[in-house]
Length: 277
Length: 257
Image (spheres, rainbow over the protein chains, first blue to last red):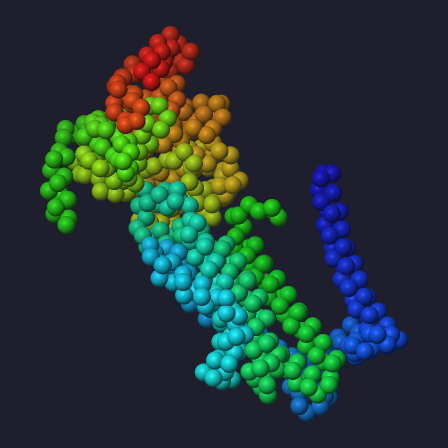
């Protein structure tokens, strides 16, 4: 009984700390940019031009559907973000469809790593953004999609391979003595065993994909839809409030994506005993 | 290919009482000679225990019978057919129970049936009766990490039994359990053995366990393993671990090790 009460109390305290720290963050932001107006030092760096949190949110809400703002970015943050979001989902999905089987093959087949390891290890350190020129050349307006795919692909491949490589041989043997063929071994032992690792790869990949889409859009689709392109356009027309509003949107969507993957992970992998319980 | 195997199995013919026969079994790992020319038979319904000094290769013999190790020489025949690899006709129970952590107990027990492509209802019916047999009917939905060591071993046993194998191969299954749990698991095994009439080959490093369980005990020498002595246990069941006969036999076996 007392333990439960303590747990309840602790839970509330966790929430409290979260809220307080977030409010403190907003307060510091607010004080910094409003205070900058009376500090020549900070003004020199144009800190006072950065919107306070409330102004940024106001700009975000006001522009969300794209009404009442100048003609260059009349389509609004909402639609631009949605476009980026779709790009990330499609790029991520392609990366999963290709990356998971390749990772499985590299991990499971005897000469898998010999065949694919070197190629992957040489391509992987090239940042997705370094591919932008080539991507624009080949894929034109679909360049950001390709960049997202690259960002997602390597973490998914590598984590899948690593997950497969560490499969417990005891379980493989147990399955064999129960009559499993190699097809069964893959589908009923190797894949479930590697799943946590695959999901980790997916989460890292999605994060990198979301980060690269913004940069790719800034360079790749200047006039089209996309939150990266949007931010670049409002910046060049001097609307810093909307730049920050766009950044908030990026952060918020990234947070949502991570949250939903963590949620799926908890549902999917409830058989794992973890520190978090 | 298959014809060749069948031809080879002709040498396997033996008498009808014999379920498993091991002939001239040898196993080397590189330059390490682990098993050196072992012969023995296992009768239908028998409970055979194998004891030997640790590292002597008793587990390797069991693994060879399971089909997990390829013999370097000799032959292992099950019901007149040479063993060529692992198969569901030999159920194995491991020391580390090797349960699938992502499956609950019932799903673990269903594993072999799933592979046979059995329908959902039949699969569940058999798995449930197997869980009943090991006394875990109330823990079907528990995941392995939620079970104690003894319970995990019961799930492992139920999983092997669900496949209705010709024989059970048990590799020090109670080795990691505490003394009390170990004793009660031995009684459980004897009860299940009595109910299912399965042929059991049981590897252990505990002389007491071998004497308590076995119809017969094979005492192995240090590596490379060969059979030092074959002992028929003539003590009435249930056996008294502190009885005179038990103690005499214990003295005899310990003297051989």
